[in-house]
Amino acid sequence: MTSTGPVCSDPYVLATGAATVRRLHVLHNIYSLAGKRILLQAGLTEGMRVADFGCGVGVVTRMLAQIVGPSGSVTGIDVDGAQLEQAAELCAV
Image (cartoon, rainbow, N blue to C red; front, side):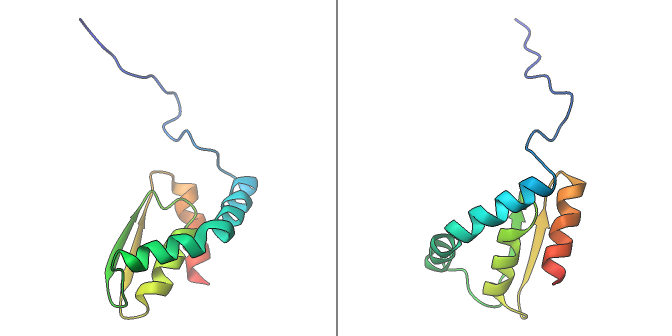
């Protein structure tokens, strides 16, 4: 038996672009308080080094950076270069 697995012509299957960025910011504004509370309960504190896998446009990455503060660091990782560029712009502010 041979299985080739799923075939995908575009390796990044999630939506991208300006409309998606706006939608992700809206969702972050809705869910960020609960998300931040969970991260703090999990033990995220100032000074930590954090990796944000699948960071997308960086809205959670920026929140993580606010939690760990200037003595910590956050590295955003994503397969989509355009998403990483948008994350870099957001996090540079």
